[in-house]
Every structure is written in C-alpha cells, then in structure tokens.
Length: 150
Image (cartoon, rainbow, N blue to C red; front, side, top):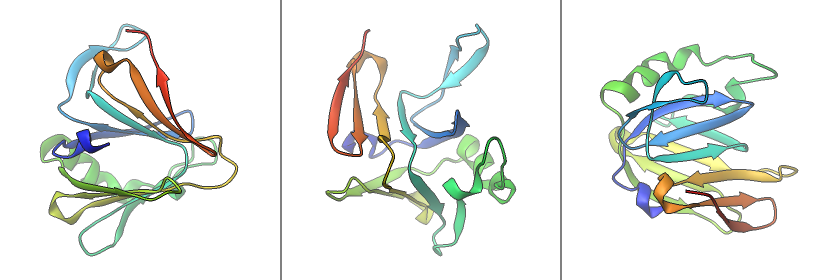
C-alpha cells in the first residue's frame, strides 16, 4: 500500500454494498455500458468497517452510514465529497497491524480507518493500475495476491 502515499483521495462511491476509495488523478474512461466516467489508477474496495474523521477526530462518514439495502445516512458528508473533486486530501502515511486493520493519515488532518471484522470472507482489496496485473486481497484468513488479465 505504500504506493498510495502521496496520492490524493479523489473519489469514493458505493456499489453492491461495498465501498470503493479511489486514489490518484481522475482520468476519462468508459464504464461497461459505454457511458463516459472517470476513474483513478488506484482503488481500494472495502467490505469491512471503515470511517473517515476530520482533524478534530469528528466522524465525517463511515460504513454505518449505509444500508441495509440502499439506505443512506451520509448527507452530512456532502461538503467532504465536494472537496474530493476540488481539493482532495493527500495520503501522508499508512499504518497496519497483523489483523489487517489499516489506518491512513491524510493532509488537513483527515484519517481513514479500516477495521476488519469477523465473518467476512473478503475484508478489503487493493486494486493497482491495470498494468500491474495483480490485486492484493485480505480475506478473513490470509493476505493473498490475485493475478489479473491485462
């Protein structure tokens, strides 16, 4: 994950009950439907608990703000979401532990805290740029490298 140090957090979005964090400059692309979208080189998909806090350790948004189904309780995070597009926080350091919890310190005092939880097969998945041809996956029992097609 050290490759994320120095990268901006430029987007975050939900799909299929998962949270995706995108790091790096957003670039034009097309989705599977052929629609114009943007994406960053680095992605971190999280199924376990996560939370973003500000410099005063006040919660901005976290996994408990979503679900069940498509329910959302993240309206208080709208200013933070806008900031990701105009002045995104930069990853300054990343710490982890043997359980697989990961803690990101970012500019302006923002933090992203990812906490593994029981009974989830896949906890998080680091998706590097497509030319790397692998992903790092933390499951409930191991840290694995998954090779992908170019």
